[in-house]
Image (cartoon, rainbow, N blue to C red; front, side):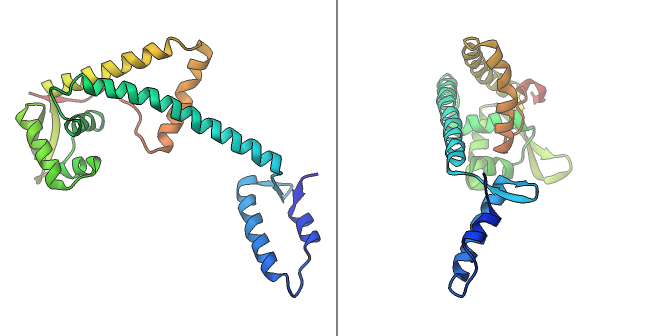
Length: 209
């Protein structure tokens, strides 16, 4: 028989000295009910075995994502190493942000890098000098600037993305087809839960010069 709120209250009747206990019990069952749901309008509390299974599944899910993350970090690190003689890591991050999000202003660049606006300006200045991005007054607000990729900047980002895609595809080719087909939905849901925008190929964006 599942443990119900009614059973708990029957075993712990209210009395002059039990008000605090009942208050704690109500809070506890409310937390359980929020996650366990109702069965025939009765909150069914999970048994210890059920909670153990859920915890085990959660641990396995986290471990699986962490293992995959180690692989992906290796892929990203190699793609960065391949262009480190051309751009620094912060500069590459700016190029990828512009490629995947479209034209940006300096405030968006600073926010994406997690730095002060003056630091973002210096990074953008260096990319402009390297002819990897183009900076122009925004058409709808001359006090603002619009940052886009140049042809050279687009080629560099394309090379980085292609290296990553090739490395990931090589791993996917070693997976059974049935498990490979299950990946997109799970990973898209994971990315969405983290607030990551859907992947777009950089060639879908415009470049200048």
